Image (cartoon, rainbow, N blue to C red; front, side, top):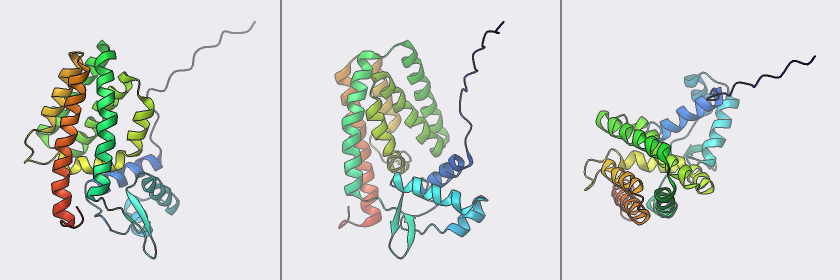
Length: 232
């Protein structure tokens, strides 16, 4: 007699591989400014600092190159990619269209579970804003938008955003810690949240556009100060 098969237990979260851990640390080091734009990424000291092989470092550099965080410069090798205003402007334009559309759809389609998750993410954003945990704040902000895209059913659009995530995170590192913004990021995201829960797609889209426009103006000021007026 054949015994009935038992269901396999679902893995709640796949364990991180060594490569995943190295990629996350290198990404955070670039986003936080530990490695400056234009700085060479030399394999040997990276292997020694992280305690991993050259193979893992090379795979990580290729991955970060695909994210736009690293570029291969002739006669210099891999370096931290620079981010100028022209690139930033294009990224903000893409975000404006995709996030605005997703927020509008989310306002029409979200359910109670989405509202709960979005509220929890917003609460966490508020907590990390108070403590100044910028790395965690960037991750929680990304989570906030992921919930919106998932509820909207905009999976392809989210894939596009994810491909830009490294450069988006670098821009967020500039704008989230800014103290001179006329309206805080938390205030903007609260407005997005309120519009979504009110099932007002026009208001949700408008709130996203206001947030993106404000962040864009802040980033432009920072990038202009770093590169000079001729490059901004």
